[in-house]
Image (cartoon, rainbow, N blue to C red; front, side, top):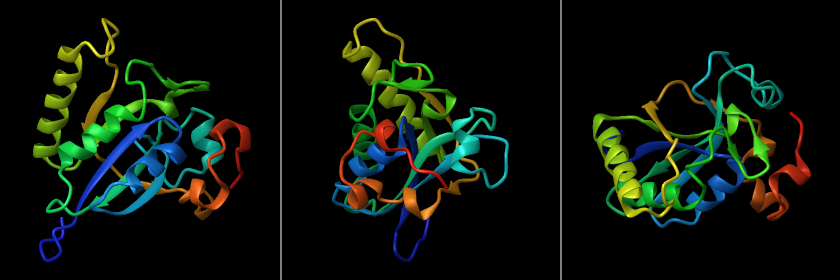
Length: 168
């Protein structure tokens, strides 16, 4: 966290990172987003390597936000609403561990908020009796994806992710 500007970071994985990034970019108080890879074992992975499923990374979005304008809990609400947290290692037709549902927390307060949010989702029965498979794990190194992936929907329109895969 930057004390002078009060900028905090949050990192979420909820399937194809293009759509997830777009959902967060629309939130007042979100200052910047970056798509990339986290949660794996390979340094500086490429899109192709991550999609192979052999690096252990998830496609993720790192969100820089102003907590005076948007709370971490509000970001969690966006996370829970922009994907199906009951689908293990997939979202829709996108299949693989790189599409898993995960919250990568940067502070103990984020971990606690994520756990509380997960409990609320379970208790709400929104997903009936389906298990919430979202991982809540410490944030590690975040590897920025190639520039062609950043703000993809703004550059290319809202075409479905698997219809127009791009190469690095």
